[in-house]
Length: 237
View (cartoon, helix red, strand yellow):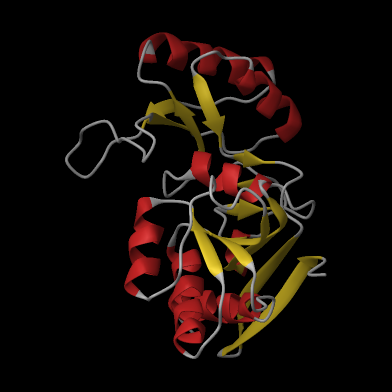
């Protein structure tokens, strides 16, 4: 069973949580895109919901599927956000931002009554940090901010290179919000809360990809003898 099949299985289970009239945060990335695709099928069948996308890519996908959309200013309180994750641990702490949408993803998730993560079970880890931690930063003073981030990482006992993310043309990547991304290749994060606080103390940091105390549940799909087996961390209620 392929990765797309597992993503679709997790997304299909999350679709069971959607009720008519809901205000939904729509995440970004391959697994979130699978959810949006299934949601579009339900909308074509008559489901009435309104979605708030977390990126321009998600907005374009949802619009193409006929999903009614709003901004977070128009719908500042959401019922549910469904989004993917790059890593999730047993405490439902996440690393997100592989798709460079972490700022909008966190704003939308925190405006929601519930956030449910959907992912391939391979994203479930004992300790966060194997996936490089994205850190969204202001363009102004980039070199100084990068050095301050490196110092903050070291102060909390982490180590590894901090690199500026580049786009396919090898230019510094720009997020939808017009910022750059630094990726911290740490290998392991012993204390995510301490690292999050240290990064917040750096003035040039706009947001970091540690989602702590935000997710309520994670729907994880694994390949079991050629069939998708879906398990849940946390509570879907």
